[in-house]
Length: 496
Image (cartoon, rainbow, N blue to C red; front, top):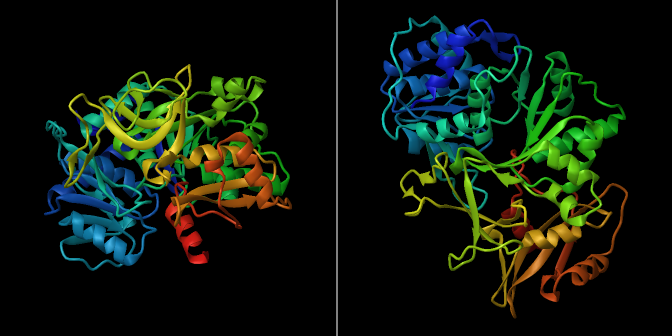
């Protein structure tokens, strides 16, 4: 199958329903379809092998995604926040390409069009009738990973993977004509891709916000009657802080659901968000680029039950990422490949039709039985709720003992003065590596490092006690909410 089929079905069933809004630009589904067919005509007349997109969220991005699919070319969104040398290096990997960007780019093998020019040309083109190619294992999207621990890898998402995810999780025309979602996640993030695909298939109006700002988010959500929203943790945290600072409860009568994901959500933030938005359905969505988006969900009912429970085992589920989707299998294994039981921490493996697990130049990372190593560490409780401890690369090896930063962070975050914390490895002459913690305190709060060490010592083994603790004003995150531990480690290296 081809992801263009999703738009084709939507345009046939609800041509006059509004599909997309961005400022003064409004596209109904029939207009969206005409633009996509026009884009495919433009792409087909070019020598481009890929359609690259380097800009903020814009209608041209969604048109290019489906237009590339109709033309049988991969869509390649690129992080516009990267440095010029980093962008040049990625462009060199995707040429020859048609590049949609508002920047001046002079690169061999790249033909550039601004988003406005591309959208205008697509709408003005004479679309050619025809069906989307249904090439077996055809590539829909090449998505560069965030590169938080190294150079970005080009994850390959095939049409079959993306279609398996959408058809397995979204009801066709499941949204009413009044439903709207506000799209704030950048187009180079898997959540940005899945937001377009799932909204189109459900028939939900997309309200695009090119650059997240809490006040503007609230204004647009109110003005457009937004019913659904997806935020990465840093966005939800900024929204909560903005509301608390303004001292005014948000007035969003149409809002029914907020989903979040893309990074670890501080427990204090989600608890406060649930207080500020009573009656709203909160969902934690955990997924990876390589899995075509979500593989686990912490549903609204579990959010409410966990928040209201006095049972520590139930309440802690608010810090989990939920249970695996019905279409996905998930296991936790040790270093020898043995499946682990409840409460035993190890590596998370997943399999299912939506799991791509493939990189350009490196091939498939899926084993003979269909399992993909997520490189995330975690554990399952007795009911199948998944708790994440961090990436495999984050593990601290102290005297041959593997230590997960997540378990130490969870203890430290239990202190009322601690707002955020990042635990990393630092070099140690005796043990090889030692534990270090960068701590952000709550506004106006103070705590002594020795008090935090005593807290960890009382809850965990002495090997987990941070050798070094630094109090910092903020922690480094990328724009999608992922903690940049390499920068935390670098800061410790520069101050030791």
